[in-house]
Length: 125
Image (cartoon, rainbow, N blue to C red; front, side, top):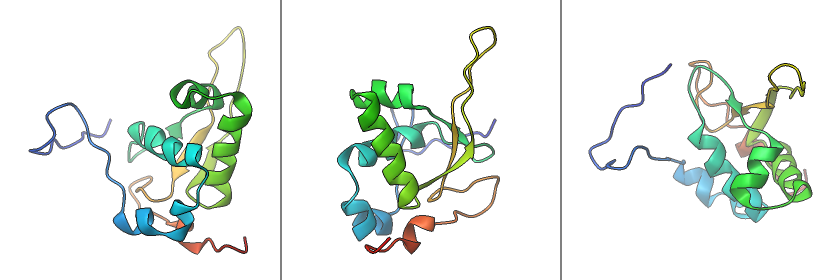
């Protein structure tokens, strides 16, 4: 597991850092509000060496919304290039279920630089 470096101003177990250019982009500013919140919750689970496992049920819980709203947030993030689906979910009552997995395009993945697909979005998409 990747070790996170503690910052001198991090006194409560973790920080989230988002690129300022992303926050000021038209793409981010016009996102569905639940999608903006979902970005933060997904980044909490980010590790450099593996995709983020985060499903609709988890989104419903952290966003305090219904299934349709959570699905709309995921769809908006995918459509605008903030996340890319890496693995599909699996539900099995006898074995462990598995959440859908995602690559956060503003963050490094598999030790490679961020792919930044969100920068390619235009209002016409």
